[in-house]
Length: 285
Image (cartoon, rainbow, N blue to C red; front, side):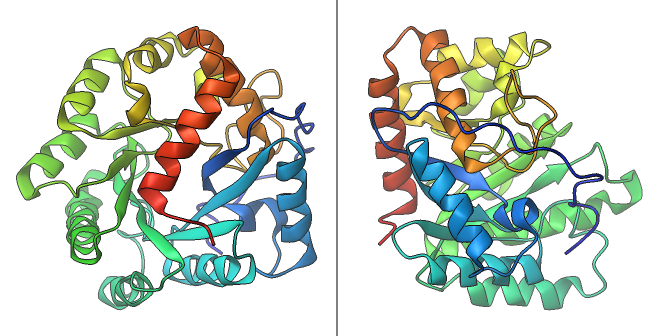
């Protein structure tokens, strides 16, 4: 496990929300960072049970390194019907690994596994990556894009302080048929461009933060068939539990917030988001 992705200090768990009336899916979680356990450990079973208690009955476990992507595949194997995996090198990981080609080869091998339903999270992060390492990051992003197209699986994008570069790269090499902006962080103008291109925008707990009015404006624009909800757990717990340990159960709080923002019923949004997730990631069985 890379300390670039670990929590800096222990946090209390966010309380399990009131259950939804309809089941929903957390399309982006890092459960190994929540539990710090083996992929088939009782702690994972308990985490999934707590999510199911809130109505979140399935989880997409998302990769950020070669080692952790293997963890995700094993977790998806261990919990059929509940977990599928995405595999990738995170854009902060790719520029600093000792053997980039070796790690990319691991991701390419894992990508064909039947429990792997997406390539991600990949993308560009100009917040943490120094300018002199960005060429390596862009190279890795392009390799992941090509892989997603080769295996015909969704691409899950991490984009931080790199909006224009991400969009330009997708335009340059051609985006996969299913392209998801995880934890969408752009504004309404960028959302319009993404919508026009057919990309999927996934909103996390950040949409509930007081300092995120641009995110809320963007979320109002997205056609429901291009909308997903995620936690990015253990990070970014939604208000009013910001700063606690985020878990997949918190999708219930995020989807209630987005439903209110879009002036639709929670049941309707749960059904639509679940339909989108199953279209993009396939059956969890």
